[in-house]
Image (cartoon, rainbow, N blue to C red; front, side, top):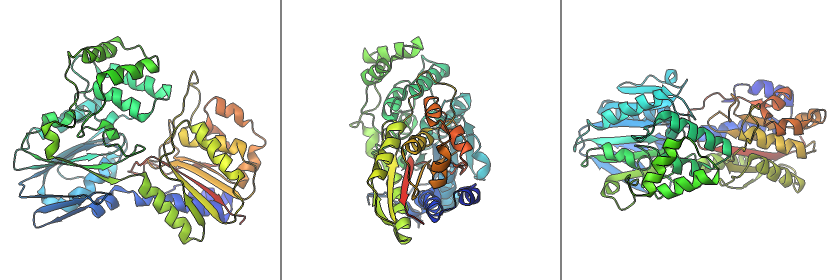
Length: 451
């Protein structure tokens, strides 16, 4: 899973480093779409049964065809797993994935469109049109399966009729640079879209059975936030979206602002709310999240003799603050063979800096490195999707070797420029996984072991 693992093990040398890298691989393996779907979905005698992570069960029977649609970083592997289970019951499908993923899977009867992420592009619109066209073919005897995962919001763009894609691109870019949370970003996206916030269901025959299989990439697993909730009721409003832009002093493009103002004034229909009839026929089933990855990491560490504490999957805020949090934890860790696991997702507030390369995991790790001075500790932070920020690394590892070499570097300079990638490149501490095919936020591991 970690493509440069041998190089990292040779350079960092300690048993703790090897254990941490193995633990990261185990965590990612636990949330691979193929495993999650085969655990959740059973198909026998023309009956489809789905069990979500909470134990809720939905059963579908007596349908004629199944149509598969979806978007997200995990959509390709999810579709492959579903097709392997359902075989010839799949009449057709259409999914949109990030560039570079299409070649990994040969999907029969499922059209795969590659598009841009995190900033949407025209290919994403074309992929969305294919999805909408397919939805229009399903009738009352059919089942539609939506495959939803992180990244789906950018990959399934369909701007509202009075704005253009460029407007959405500018808004998304401004929000990402501002350090807005995923909840805030998606509240705005929903109200500039024709498909998000439950609106995708407006294109479906009212008699169809509807199933959404969802992998969460948001803290708290709010199904209305994951991929901007295309099949889930929207509790946010036009007023919320407009206030978020005002909060971050985003005043352009004018067309997007005017669209939101029209919505606040009641001139544009709100996104579908929980009481609407279409949701009574829709089963939104969460089948994977960060908690699963953290528990897998915890189990792996315990299996290898480590006293382990799972700190949960709700860590957020700024990456630098999370790095300081990890560093402060190390001050009190005196037990041998002790490990901590933490999941969640932070943000990086760029401000005027545009020169740096890296992401939230590398920035958190670099902040931690600047504060820690121990010869018995290893810390690693990665994104489970294998892509950290604007870099090709998944994250970074901090070891006694890294700590020793970093004393000769001006880490503050790299932090001020948000250039964690180049700092860790000099320290031979970048972790590369390539695209993992899944996406359930980030995971950090702290390991204390004198060996």
